[in-house]
Length: 497
Ligand code: BES
Ligand code: MN
Ligand code: ZN
Image (cartoon, rainbow, N blue to C red; front, side):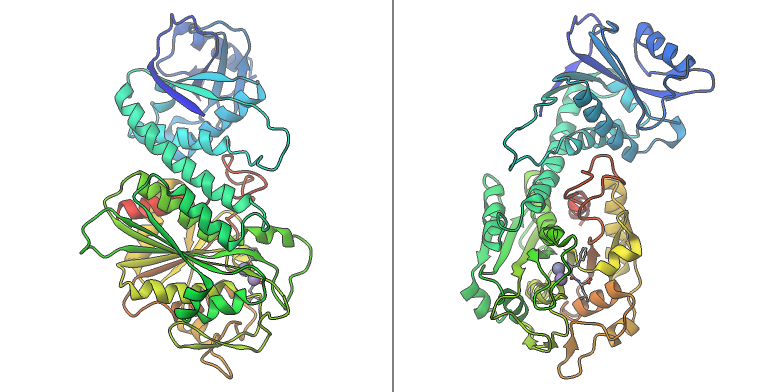
């Protein structure tokens, strides 16, 4: 999608579509900053109850020739008092979807009518552009026929933002949306096209032209690091594991980095404890935590944030080949702790434990990990909220605040000593399976905490429910496909770190 930023003028004699934003009032409708003829057109539809200016509602006026444009698209924002930046993000998605439905290839957005309700106007503009670009995501890499849709949008500035301001906001929004869409591409790519080796290559490719340093430890190097969990999980597959490292230096070397850790399980069959066939294909998404961390690093580097951040993505397949780990096997983690594998399908925690201990050696200011870790998380919070666990209220609040700014939803979950007790091993230090059936996402978090270095603030985000198929919750996410959740939140956290 190409964007242009221009001052809006009503005698432009444009041929395309003008998009205006509307709010309802008692007897009438408002289109802030718009010409009288535009208002009259929308008012007519409002009076006749064809259009109520409610959120996500829209009406297309074909060949209306008002405001200097051929067509007019009116989009509802709803009650002025209730409009949030998330509503403007949703309005961006409605804009894209309606223009696509009308087969429009170009459009001009009337910014004054959009931004009247947002404080500050720049935040609203950023959210709108994000929503538009996130909604435009279409994973058609493996389709022979590609559809063409809206390819050029003009941001028509009025009184509320200058063209210079709009241009700089546009750049930020584009970086965030493109990074999120990259995360989606990595997730939507199937297991045979996104192996650990290919994931490492994709991270390196995406980082080209940025200040990021990307390396990937090979199997031999992972053995040297004694990452018994990552090796144990990978041993049932013919694909070698990788341990991806992405480093960004935006502040003085003396400043402790923020470490991001993401589960990069490129396909989870369950291993010897094989998963049932129904929906097993969705386990290509089991690397969404890693993909989100990669996307966030790309955005952080492109935004040139003044912070040090290092990302670690342990990546492997979980298969049931002849040399696969067996239920009951004992693995030794990088930090020396032993784990009995009572269920080979609880593999995420096994690859993350080595990554958390590796990250801890870096003595970071904080560690945030992301993983599609447990089905129990989906049961607890569905696909609306990402569950977060942690050992430090300040960091937990930073993640909550970041999510508030990005419009993503997180929910702080309890983690107490009972959950730790449930993860004790019979013949090893720990078990990878809880001794109780319940609170499975909390006991998984308790397991992970054993590998976070003493005194390091840590937050674990279980994105099992939010990583994909969230289109019924957010209109800028695909109904089927990766959501790219937490990329924008991680960037917000890094910004304030
Ligand atoms: N990747 C899955 C978790 C998952 C399941 C994410 C469904 C999204 C949707 C993970 O590796 C797993 O299999 N977890 C097991 C753990 C159990 C064996 C303790 C689970 O949740 O069933
Ligand atoms: Mn599993
Ligand atoms: Zn898994």
